Image (cartoon, rainbow, N blue to C red; front, side, top):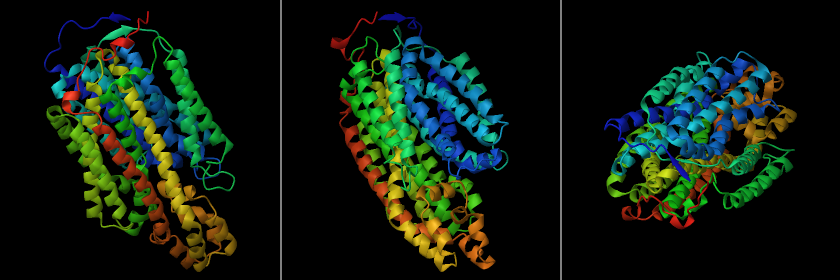
Length: 574
């Protein structure tokens, strides 16, 4: 392998802080936009004149939510590898530009109906490409810029921005969407322009670059396999032929089975090609393997949490406390501010302390604390006191960040300089793909919990309030996912379930009762609690496994950065 233009002059002492500022801006922007559409969904679909709750339209809703995560999960390894070959700063800066261009394209959507829905999905996927270019190389740029004893602090700031950006996006989307939904995309354009110019003027290539062939076969099989698995998981939570979920669908099963087979083929290819995109020998580095495994399990534990909290707040708690359903999206974002606050405080602090004492105590301790926080959420009643909920959210955010930054620093410290881009991309791929898996698993567990009692409770409640038996039977047999999506979109679920024709058969008093703010939350409370507990039980187990995986990394004395940890496996790729 031939090395290219490794820098010969040291950067100025202030360069590392400039790099941290640029990289943190990019990560914050990317993660804000990954979630900003969630709260703005009602305004977006109303603006383009498309009802995502109509049969056949769930495609638009699912891909607006999960398409961004799927693209970033699939592409970060390849883009990190390209950063190792052509320069991490070059790929990162290009990512800023790509993200900005497609944010502008999203903000000028002029079409309506299905055409507008497809335009938004396609432009969103290209926006995710820019985000993947940022995510794949940010940690490697910081590792190149900061000395070993300060990387924990740098990763802490960067990870705090990444974690909190997901929840900040909820608030920003809720604030801007009521004025004009185009603003949720337009707001990224000036920030992206600033970051693009600032990055091109300020960032320097400090990492090693090695000329190498691009592993086209590996890239293709990895992308196809990951997309098929994630598409299968995405459509698995959709109803199929009278079933509440689609896990018996030949399409879903086919996607998952073929996707897994292709991933096995990918692993075989990567062991045989001269210049693999996925550096499998890196898994022989114990701190790297432990950190990546812990990252995957942690993301699996928390990935679906945001959706559970949003549905809990929008579908039950906020209506019970006097908020109309159309106002709940904004206030759900506001209600989760304590989670973001905990992340912003804990991320830099835990990163700084991990520089002195090693990653293991903070990463493992953080995930143990996350498990305790999930247990505390499970102990809360559905109609909780907010101050208790807020305190639990704060410590949940602080515990997640206490894990995130030391774990990322431990992973990056374990990598040889020439593989930092690929290693960072591998870690991000495991993290992002786990979030998609987590969403599918959380929704599956929640729907299973709802399915056990929701249909009976709904039928009996509607009959008791004068709804004709035929209408009540039809409404009670609709898939639970449609009820959850209605609450998620700020629509009164009872109004969605009965429809205009069903409501027209009721008196004004009966309509007022059924459409009141307390009726649906009271009806769904027990069923939701059962599903929520199943999802949180899974999250607790995953968190404990993540703590154990992190502990296996070894003590600080074991976290040794080597120039070439795998000398016996060195290959001349030319």
